[in-house]
Amino acid sequence: MKIVVIGGSGLIGSKLVGKLGAQGHEAVPASPKTGVNTLTGEGVDEVLGGADVLVDVSNSPSFEDAAVLEFFQTSTRTLLAAAGKAGVGHYVALSIVGSDRLPDSGYMRAKVAQEKLIAASGLPYSLVHATQFFEFVQGIIDAATDGDTVRLAPVLIQPMAAEDVASAVAEVAVGAPMNGTVEIAGPEQFRLDELGRSLLASRSDSRSVVTDPAARYFGATLGERSLVPVDGARVADTRLDDWRARAA
Image (cartoon, rainbow, N blue to C red; front, side, top):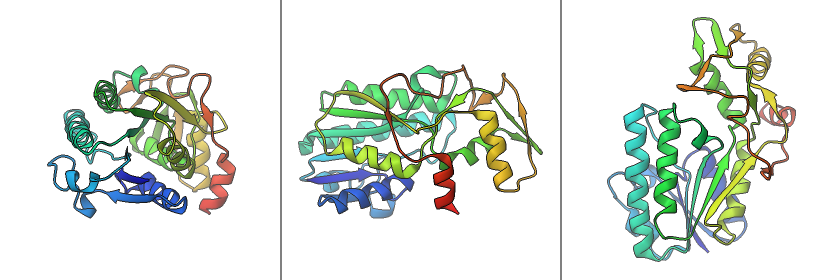
């Protein structure tokens, strides 16, 4: 199959292209680096010519509320129109576990808007909701930092390795459209504040984590299970210690 990966130059996209190519598919990375711009439409029709599957793992260059909403709405409308013209048989998009449970977050609102556009398009589709990546926990810590203090809520988090995210998305991409959502997650649950302390200690980072139930997560107030999947999620194999060993 010809599978076009929007965001194919990024962390997940590059891994996904490699996995699909190793399976014998024609995996085509598409991003501004390859001359494909989903905001302007440049190169989109051309790259989707003859495509069987479109996988969108792209991300907004800005997380500011208005900018991220504009990115996902404009990009998705561009892709849906081009996919319809090209006769793409399966539209796959990567999103986030809990996106519909965190309306205070501008980024999550933008992801929900993206998902609604896809579901209403009439194209066969699959939405993959992933928990946070191990690779992203540092970004969570940095966003919660004020001086030498990191304020994190003691809520549950079930992160997973980017490698496992790519494997799961690849599996969905070559399967039949679900016209629905599947959740994927790591094999272990942690408390977010404890995970932050563990990561900082492993990197000899002198910042201290303060447990704060009111601490916000990219603008959103978290509940106990805001960041973890519901029952029935697909669970990946890579544990935190395994990921750390590989990273080292």
